[in-house]
Amino acid sequence: MSQIRIGTLVNGGDAVRILPQIIPHGFESFSLTFWQTTGSVDLSELAKQVKEIIAEKDIIISSLSVFGNPLTGEGNNADTLKSWERLIDIAPEFGTDLVTGFTGRMPGSIDQSIPRFAEVFGELTDRAKDKGVKIAFENCDMGGSWETGDWNIAHNPQAWEMMFNAVPKENIGLQWEPCHQMVSLIDPIPQLRKWIGKIFNVHGKDATIAWDIVKEYGIHGPKQFVWHRTPGFGDTNWTDIISILRQHGYKGSIDIEGFHDPVYSGDLEMTGQVHGLNYLKQCRGGDFVPNPV
Image (tube, rainbow, N blue to C red; front, top):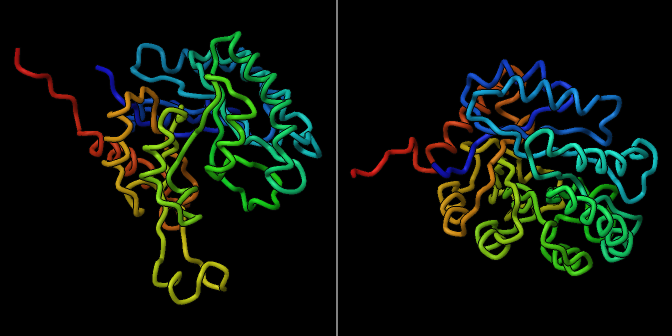
């Protein structure tokens, strides 16, 4: 059965410890992530151990990710670009064809980052293509705007237009989630329909918008107006999202990005994630039922 898998994100450096504990909950894919650097992790050995853990199970590694700033390489981001290269090279050993992360950005506006973006990711997409690998960018603003920021330019559709014009390659796209658009008060549903051809992976993260606060205090006042949520607890219609994905032949996964929900956190983290897992499975139609023959 061709099915959109529902999985979760796992810290790559801790995957061997974590995966055996959460596999029984029914996750169907795992995205292995690193913060700024793959560090001293022996990626080839990790790939071997992870493959042993998921062997003979209907589970895949959906992507490898490094979240840092590969454009400046400053401070703790000094190894981020090399980590992109390592993950691209090692991806086939994990059985995945997708490496993801932030674009990074240069000081100043998004416009000022495009030349360096084109230089860095022009080379990385060629490297990835030689390995049969695709590259995708998460759409998180990381507290940045159009004019300033330290991490990522891929948080606005106008920036996507500029990015993909600067690097016009088929193996470069988005690791999209509705939450990061909703915090900017962008409607994710029409955006998904427009950009589906560039969406290689979906992060399962939702948002709750307090419209009463927006209407009274706006978005620059002292009161918080939006919260990141685990799917099943936010405002997004995930049945619509999965329907749109299926209508356009999407073959990837939806991987829950946990540790953001302000209610289902701490001791309730996995309670929330497993609820999100089962909720998303129902949104895709529940268990597969074969047609009569």
